[in-house]
Image 1 (cartoon, rainbow, N blue to C red):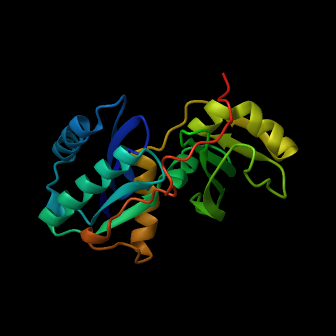
Image 2: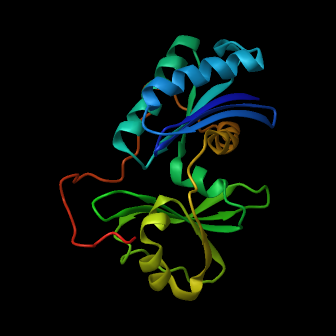
Amino acid sequence: MKILSLDTSTEACSAAIWTDGVVVERFESGNQHSALVLAMVDDLLAEAGLALTQLDAIAFGRGPGSFTGLRIAAGVAQGLAYGAGLPVVPVSSLAALAQGVEAPKVLAALDARMNQIYWGAYRKNQMGIVELVGDETLATPYEVLIPTDEGWTGAGSGWDQYHITLSQRLGNSVKSWKQKVFPRACHVARIGGVLFNCGMAVPPELACPVYLRDKVAEKSNIIPEN
């Protein structure tokens, strides 16, 4: 299986090619996603010696995350897939974040701005692939659901920003949290390969971002932590 994957859902920008379990990736942090991602794709295809038409699918981080970043990834995935006649596999950016954490149970949180976070709880199955527990949600750090069991690991920009509040809120449910963890294309590719094999690829026109937030002008009164 050969899958090209993209993620521009956060301040990090990455692209990867997964070829039968072997992955090559390009990763950069910054705010130049639209300029970086296509150059990364060209570089990866050249390194792998592949043309787009030789791929099986294109996977992308469909969100939640940065509104602009999600549109970039979806638009690039759609354009490349249309041109090469390929299906597209949307992958949760929270799931990709959790996949990259070396822990069996991960509470993934991305900073959603406006004093809110995108939140998802994930367990890794016997194949080492994350599976969502419950729903992905948008909430304040004070409102996240507390797991009924212990031993969870926190990760993501939501933890970087609100680790004090989240640790107090979750108590003994969380054993640790990891700093500076981002969704990455290599993990989008791994999850995307599983979804592709399960028949969950879609035509390019159905490759849409998932924002979770509808009311972008609404604000709360929580003060971000230092």
